[in-house]
Image (cartoon, rainbow, N blue to C red):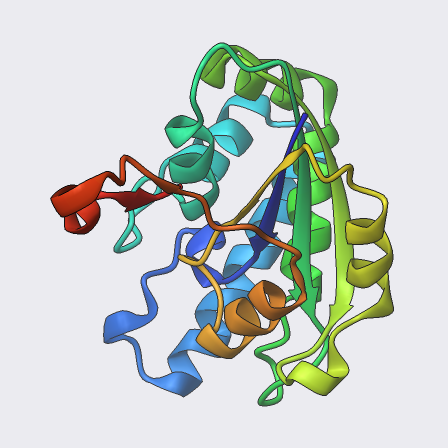
Length: 193
């Protein structure tokens, strides 16, 4: 099994925040959240799959879609942890986004479409009580990570959330760096896997 820790952000809603002033970002976020909630209620499968996998963000397709597409095949099971925060400038918390994505991804037809598109099976879990500061990392994340076998791959997606959130998660994750391809003068040619 592979675990993906995906700190959520506006890119997951299809919002490119790079050219939007802060007050407009909050409005765009609320509008996108409302739109996804309506699609979930209507069980609009094709639109939800489209929103979850392709958008107009600076990373089109979505950050999560990029991560899923980058996984080596064959792959069997993927555990996706959607990491949302309950802190930040008013209105910028991402726990609502995380819960919306979880609801959408757990709709049977949406799940089936995503699994077929990326050739994998997945389950999704929300950790929605994260913080933006290292001391407010959640015990939920710590507990989840303690239950992951050391032989399992853990991937932290650093594309879609606040840098402080990503760095806090990476500080929590037990990871090992393995330098591959090092021999003699080829040391500079090695890479970290």
